[in-house]
Image (cartoon, rainbow, N blue to C red; front, side, top):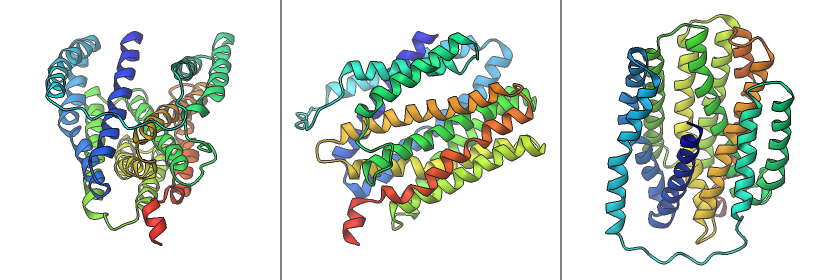
Length: 349
């Protein structure tokens, strides 16, 4: 299972970076939000059927059947993509500028991420050692995979890359802990929990479509700020549920509300990263965005998981604390949104 998850991560990273680079090199700036909204909408169909169906399959048989079904479903689209690419004329790649991080750097950061994920699963000496190794590897090598001054949120691409990690980390943590809360503390059936995922996917796609059609005249960094405000509200709602003993639909609604915010934030940050990228460097910008996204998910989820494990597991206090810590990345996301301002809009003003 771990090997399968590793291969899934490799393929997802390659695919998303390639798609975003193709969008940056093929579509004009004004059409990129709509193309990315279309990409988000392509998740709606599978999201409507997938989570509830997975919940029913788990209830009826075993969770293993879900993965066997997923393996079979990946074959037809893979064949279709190969056939389409064989008919496509490939333009020569643009000349590269600057020094690119090598495979060793990427492997070191990946190893650090893996060690960090293992470290948060326990509190003994071995897990602490893995945690220390994770910190050393990530701190030593991640700067070479991100634009300079990313960690200080320098204006332009560095801030855009950083905010992508903060946004993804916040949403990923909600996506991990809300179903766990519903399953353990609220005793919600798996099929209903699956419907929460469906609602979040539809909300994300609908929000992405709406911002690409109705917020076209709004400066892009302000759209990021508006979406970030919704993510802040979602984190507060998720924390209020366990702390104040609110019904299960409050934390469930927080995931949907966060998805609405992410539908505004995520595609707009991608558009801004392509706008900030130098000519011929869209691939590097997309790669940095993907790296930040994964590290943000790891870092924020690890922090919430560590706090969750320190307290009595699967109690309202531990869930509330895990959600409360999301105030830090979500507020930073809202406060730093202005630093991603579109270079075209900045020069026009």
